[in-house]
Image 1 (tube, rainbow, N blue to C red):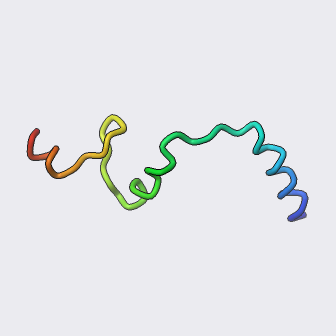
Image 2: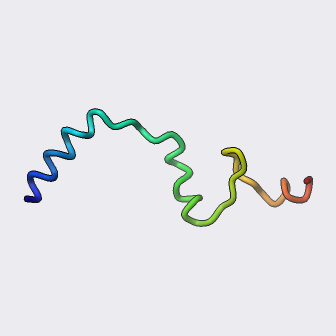
Length: 48
């Protein structure tokens, strides 16, 4: 069963799209705030 699922994943991988912004996933998991796709820093909060 595990082999079958693995082979199906390999076949499906050809049609999958790459995620844009995958490098930001760790920041999202850590709770970093983003606005319109741009990371919000403390300096940005003070300027607003």
